[in-house]
Amino acid sequence: MEKLALIIPQPCIDWNAGELRSAPCLSNPRRRDRFYKVDCPQCKTPRWLRKHDAKKGSVCSNCQRSAAGARGYAAMLQKHGRERTLEAIQQRERLHPSQPEFLTRLYLHELGYRPVCQVRFNCWLIDLVIDNHAIEVNGYWHQRTRQDRDRQLAQLWHGPILFLDADRIINDPISTKIALLAFLTGEKIQ
Ligand SMILES: [Zn+2]
Image 1 (tube, helix red, strand yellow):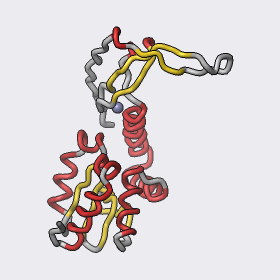
Image 2 (cartoon, rainbow, N blue to C red; image 1 turned 90 degrees about the horizontal axis):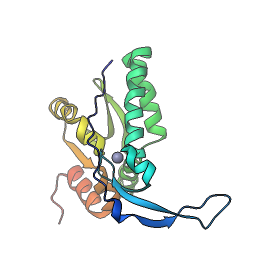
Image 3 (cartoon, rainbow, N blue to C red; image 1 turned 90 degrees about the vertical axis):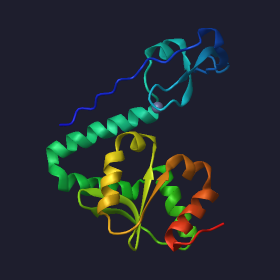
């Protein structure tokens, strides 16, 4: 089983820059507590944490989920083998796409395209395929851990591939749609 070794530097926290923020509880809905701004040591997303939590230096919930997902995948692979693992992931991702992938499907539909989702290719699943055009939605974790996979995929896939950044999909729908349209029509769009 592949071991996921993560060396995470402890965040540097300014203990003088705490802020009183609302922290309601059942007995006191108007309770306030001091929070500190701490960047996730993994993805650098800032979060507001209590001192106790800030000191732990743990990663954010998104990074935790990604790491748990990777561990779950390794365990599944060992138990069920590659075929059944890929089938299970294919089904799950089709039904429960990530937010950026869901948005990309939506944009494609708006542009009049009907993509096939989670297409099996060699030992991979490609997020979206239209004819021979492949579209991969890459989140932060993907960019960090799967660059080799993207390179191999780009070499073997029999058509053009577009790698889309998850942040861009979420934050800039218009430029994403323009990029999709340019990619699918092969035309430069102003
Ligand atoms: Zn994170």
